[in-house]
Length: 276
Image (cartoon, rainbow, N blue to C red; front, side, top):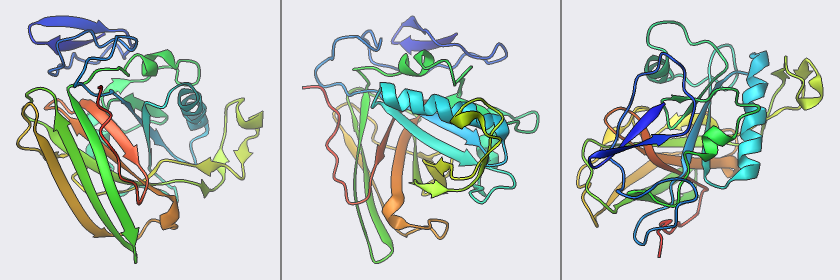
């Protein structure tokens, strides 16, 4: 089980993790953060981050793909990133820090899926509840992005607002691409049970990280403060169609656990998901 530190007392999060995982802690708001807890004014909606370590060559990875589809049907509070590696046209070159985070002592075996970066998502094709349990009406920080994309250039502001004091936080910002069609090996009974899904659509594909993949330190993370980090970069060379891009921003703690995350599309100006 995972434990969250609530300023002197502990609340158990009802999600399964592998038996060799150690406990991780981070400061959280001093209210019940269960998914159905009443919204607290001034706090923010809490989204869950789903990171899918996958490959077009990985026949069992379709179990995770199917599970993600079920999650997205059940909630709009899931932020998904697909991290391809191996002999794969969407291989993410800078995946080693992520591999060492979740699998430091041996090779990365696929499929792998992590919730909020470090929680092992077990049985993803049949188990959506562990993901839903990590959403909430209340979180101590919120994220809002504003972007413009034109002339092959990205202008992106990532705003983080704090409803409590935090320390030792890091910001991770990704560029993703959707609607990439490429054959997917399939050992599951999903997707009509065919061994090779020729027209498989790969979404949420990680194309570039605008920060270190494990995050850049954030300062000024105190109650009622807003921190803005701005990026002005070319559209990543790996992106085949800028119209299919999206952005993901997450804030992680000193243990690399995601506190909150959010996704955004180009030319979008987001408001904070703040409770009135």
